Amino acid sequence: MVKPVSGFSKKTKAEKIEWLSEAYLDNDPSATLVLKKYWNSDTALQKLHDDFIENTLSNYYLPFGIAPNFLINDRLYALPMVLEESSVVAAASNAAKFWLSRGGFKAEVIATHKNGQVHLNYKGAVKDLTSFFAEVKPKLIESISEIQRNMVKRGGGLIDITLVNATEKLEHYFQLHCTFETKDAMGANFINTCLEQIAHTFKTEAAGHDTFKAENTFPEVVLSILSNYTPECLVKAEVSCKVSELKQKQIDGKTFAEKFVRAIDIAKAEPRRAVTHNKGIMNGVDAVILATGNDFRAVEAGVHAYASKDGQYTSLTSATIEHDTFKFSIEIPLALGTVGGLTSLHPLVAFALQVLQKPSAKELMEICAVAGLAQNFAAVRSLVTTGIQEGHMKMHLMNILNQLQTTSEEKEQTVNHFKTHAVSHSAVVEFVNTLRTQ
Ligand SMILES: CC(C)(COP(=O)([O-])OP(=O)([O-])OC[C@H]1O[C@@H](n2cnc3c(N)ncnc32)[C@H](O)[C@@H]1OP(=O)([O-])[O-])[C@@H](O)C(=O)NCCC(=O)NCCSC(=O)C[C@@](C)(O)CC(=O)[O-]
Ligand SMILES: NC(=O)C1=CN([C@@H]2O[C@H](COP(=O)(O)OP(=O)(O)OC[C@H]3O[C@@H](n4cnc5c(N)ncnc54)[C@H](O)[C@@H]3O)[C@@H](O)[C@H]2O)C=CC1
Image 1 (cartoon, protein in one colour):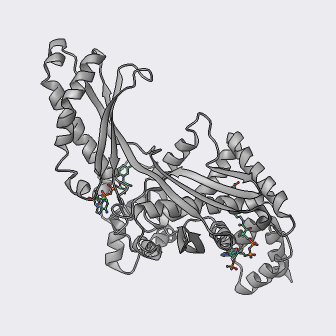
Image 2: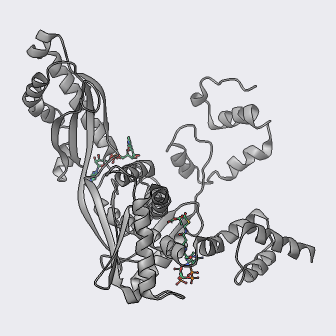
Image 3: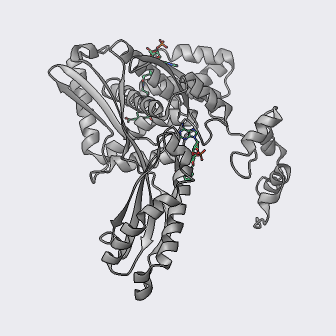
């Protein structure tokens, strides 16, 4: 039976691997060899990666791909995409190519405010807390002046603090709701540092306040943290064209447009469909988020909360046909950074940002929203015409062939065969087996 380990974090990388091998891998040398295969021969680069997280043993590769031909606000981009799923980059590229000849994508940042809260517990009279807050607010703002000096110089910083009475949600629960502008930074660390200082000043001032002392009831700081729900940090992207321009191989433009709009309306109405529909959108968004070193957990949490903002989880995209014009759009909250975090540390992130022509955070918001819209267009287009499996399995074929450890000759013969046959896992296995018994 494996015993708990103490002081694991203090061990060297080699000692950690040795412990792991003994505890969980039966000292199998081939198991640990795979970790070593993924070490980078450039020791400085390896050290950089080791330091990104804690207890690092190796690197975990994901493919870095490019989807070209994205015309966004009349500028042509090639989108860097990092993810593990086949057919996503092909789908993005396909949608980009389709819209390139139809005016491209229009994207616009609606707002860029982020927020965070100091969460309070207070059992006294509401009017006492309200008047204390009005009195102490200038001191709260003053107390972060040093922290936010440079951010203010850039045109950002704290925008406002309001006291929120949240006792209808939870007994004795109040918040200091703080709004920030963080310019090209995602802002999590900046906001958290500000919030913790605001909380500290609030607590100190409250402890010395006569009203609270007289009642012996003080507001208590429970915790201070930014919110990853950022509905005031919002971006919109859109494509449009004449319905007749949507003509597909076996289906005319009008029929396609109507079926497409119906598919989006179904995702609007039915949460079970909406979740998969939005997963398809996030195929594109997350891939660019990862390539540019942004925090995909933060983005995912915020986007899905936004999809539920009206009380039911729904589609993040909308489609309409008005006067013979098809319009397809997305609106999502995206708190992104093009400075800070990993953005200048990870060489491939720096490379991705260079490919994107060193965008501002606002431009990156527009690019990511477009990646989501394009991905959704490609997926829904397949869903309402050929079905998803035809294109997806065509791209997944190489994964199956690699699983079967096929030779390059077997690969070539199989790819040729499946140009005219439907790909499924069992059909590929059967075909490869036939080749091998010939
Ligand atoms: C897969 C395609 C693109 C094939 O589409 P196709 O029409 O057979 O492609 P094609 O061979 O005619 O090529 C046309 C263009 O597609 C792109 N393309 C085509 N092949 C490649 C490739 N190998 N590598 C890179 N790009 C490729 C590329 O832009 C190419 O232009 P070119 O480069 O030749 O000038 C199409 O069927 C498609 O878009 N399918 C949708 C796939 C998809 O959405 N995958 C996501 C995974 S499924 C999922 O997770 C989400 C989902 C579907 O459940 C969401 C939902 O339910 O809403
Ligand atoms: N709940 C969450 O989402 C949390 C996320 N994080 C992590 O925090 C990191 C992001 O925090 P940040 O504060 O953005 O990063 P950061 O701590 O690296 O700070 C970025 C700094 O860059 C400087 N800067 C230089 N040029 C700037 C410009 N043009 N605009 C704005 N700032 C500029 C500012 O001093 C800014 O504070 C991510 O790695 C994220 O994963 C951390 C805690 C919680």
